[in-house]
Every structure is written in C-alpha cells, then in structure tokens.
Length: 239
Image (cartoon, rainbow, N blue to C red):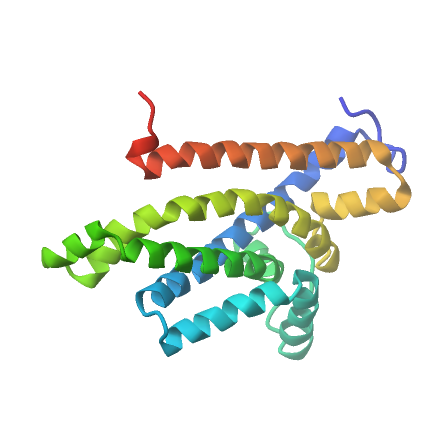
C-alpha cells in the first residue's frame, strides 16, 4: 500500500498499475530491436574483421553511442511523423485492444531507445566473437570440415554470448532510465512519464513507488542474467 497520490487523489497502486504495461512493452520492443540490429552486424564484423562491412558496423556502433536517445527521438518524429507521415508522432493504444496499431505507435520510441543499446551490444558481440574465433576448438571445428555458418552459430556464438548476456543485464538499468525521457517525448503513458509528472507536482508517494518498481526490475534482471549463465555454459551449472 503506497498510499494516495497527493496530486491525482487516487491510490498510487492504481496509477502505477495502469502505467506498467506501456513501459514493459516499450522496454521489450527496444530490447528486441537492439538484438535484431546488434547480433547480425556484430557477427559479420567479427567474421570479416578489417573489411568494409566491419567499418560500416563500427561506424553504426559509434553513431549509436554518440547520439542521445532524446535527440534521436526528436529527429525520428520530424522525419517519419511530420515529413513522411508514416508513423504518428506519439500516443499509445493497449496491445490487447489493437495489436497492429499498438506496435505501430511504439515503433519510433522503441527504435529511439533501442539504438543506443544496440551500439553497446554490437561492440561487445564483435569483441567477444573475435576472441572466440581464435580459440583452438574453433580451429578444430573448421578442420573437421564444418561450414562457416555451423562453426560461427553453433560453436563460436554460444560461447561468445556469455559476456554479452552480462552487458544486457547491466543495460536494463539504462533501458529503464531511458524510458523516462522517451515516454515524455512520445507521450507514452508509462511509468517514466508518470514519474516526470509526479516530480513536477512534487507527488512523492508516486515517485517512491516508481523508483521502487524500477529498482526491483533491475534486481530481477540481474538474477535472470545469473541464471542464464547456467543455460549457456554447462561449466557453471549446479547439481
């Protein structure tokens, strides 16, 4: 029981409960976009180091780190919402009410939030894959006559994902922090936008509830990261 909101005059639990779904959807879609960008580019850059593909991947990674997500969000609104008119500038529709429209509304904020994470993951995947590709068991797999795709996907990638999973777990905190800015820019009624409004109104019960839930989400993400180690690496499994 977090009490009642000083500004909205409603139970804090009810306010936060209605704002969890948009934030979770935004975080999940941002993570999926980041993985869809980072995995193929990171693998290609590691398999062909020094090539023009590697140079393009490195440039994309540096650009993703250099451009703040709030600036990228504004640029996306200007281009795709105001100029091209492909996507709406903001708003939210629950996924259960209209899945297609919900995804369409969340694409721009998810892309703005996911590109920064994609850049970090891309660099980590590339460095981990480069280290793994020089190991003896990869050379043995090649000497057995296995094709490049099997060697990369079944032997190298599974071992290279362990440090990548660690980075993903750490980046969940950054993801939660990014939702505060992105939800405000795109008018997504999630926990981030609720926290910003509560700060302006000095509605401290709401702020306490949002901070507590975000901190709990980060703790659970670290726990899930530790459990995934045992799934990916048999050496760290416990009987």
